[in-house]
Length: 82
Image 1 (tube, rainbow, N blue to C red):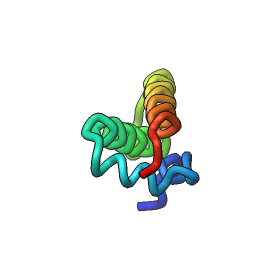
Image 2: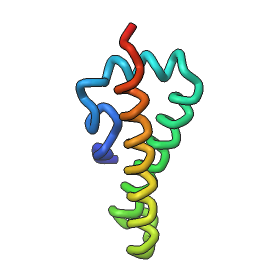
Image 3: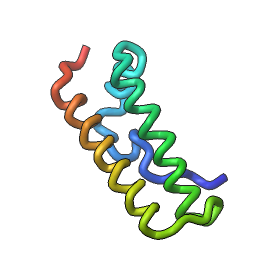
Image 4: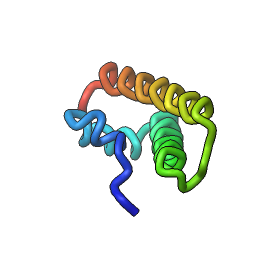
């Protein structure tokens, strides 16, 4: 399978280490990150027609992914680095 675009480390490269730390230490953050990754892979499958989907559903999933990314980025910005 090709590289799935929009992974968290791709979207937030300055936070790559912090993402890893929080996935290990913060259950809520880990759940959000897992949800983001699953949704991102689902969008990728939809866009590449592995899972043919109506355009409206793809857009809905993209908006949900963006909302998760915003929440994750807010948590990263608010969280002090260890």
